[in-house]
Image (cartoon, rainbow, N blue to C red):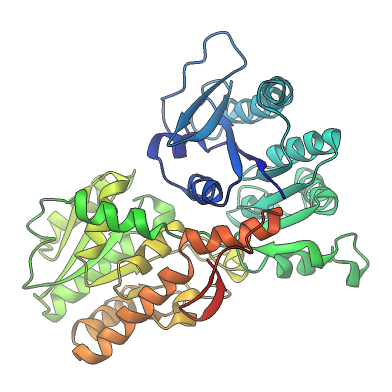
Amino acid sequence: MTKNIWILNHYGTNMYRDQAGRHYWFAENLRKLGAKPTIFCASTFHNSNGKIDIGADKYASEQVNDIPFVFVKTPDYKGNGRSRIWNMVSFYRNLFPVARHYAKRVGKPDVILASSVHPLTLIAGMKIAKKWGIPCVCEIRDLWPESIVAYGALKKNSILARLLYQGEKWIYKKADKLLFTMEGGKDYIVDQGWNQEKGGPIDLNKVHHINNGVDLETFEYNKEFHTVDDEDLNNENVFKVVYTGSIRKANNVRKMVEAAEYLQFKGHPNIQLLIYGDGTERAELETYCQYRELQNIKFKGFVEKNKIPYILSRSDLNIMHFEQNSLKRYGASLNKLFEYFASGNPTISDCEFGYDLIQKYQCGMVIDNANAKLLAEMIIHFSSMPKAEYSVYCNNARVAAQDYDFTRLTGKLANLLGVETTDRPMVQTGSETEER
């Protein structure tokens, strides 16, 4: 029976601060199964100037809610330039002495879960695991370099891209198991021609999938105890359409502004768009709304994560947006989507993903690459929908949230890592029966 589990996640420091997130919730639920998870992460916070002060040492360790975090010393960085690359390299290099020293203190792990974003964490996990003769599960949360190529930052046939693809193939070959957050991980390997059936080195039988999800217990707690005093959000006389997330060029919130403009022009004063989040495009879009005298859209600014559940619970419809690129065919693993499900309200999306969950659960409407007019017409459709029909979408959203509750997802991970779970009862929730 696997007991000691080391989770390597460079950017897990944010989970320590927020007491939330994929690996935090995995660790929380693994402890309930009798396992002893430890999260290794950088001493710096991602997209923030904050850091964990560890002095002259190589690392520091702290516990939050009985979950041990090990902070590996890494230098400060800003943006995506050389300083960030050096931060990645430093995390990789320092993991080895930190692992040796920490193992002397508390004992060696039985299995390592090494999680990307960047591949150096995966390589470190495999090397450490090989030295101690234990398995390493490589978790792929981002396709490198495919993501860089898809967003146009790297040419697919460049020398650097070819080297990175070869490195990616090597990792997939050497990993004891592969765990993709996106459901189309196997499709990606097949498309690259790396599977054994096409003469490649990778056995598809070791490829697994566990998506992101939502901790429903935490969601419900935050919804009740972290409320927002917002007269627009609490207005029962309008149909509220909510977007939560960044407001940057890649998020294309401008399309939502244009949809609001169409709604106002067509005369739908009962519909209100509420945008929660911040980013580089916010000021420009607010200025545009003022210039066009749009009364049906408001930018609410940044809010703490623990207030998102309450905000979503007060919405009538949620908006999902994703930039069109080649990655979408492999599926989505967007945290926001599962929070939308947990709200128990329908979701509309302008991007059809492979293995699309909104379509699978019939908890909203998807029109691929929808323009502002189509987005507005979807909003009108839901705002005028009969109550009985609307309730079906709401119920389906709750079913989706139950299926992607981290209690359930951790059961899948425990089986993958070799943690004994046979003492847990089988329950029926949502679309399938699983251990819980």
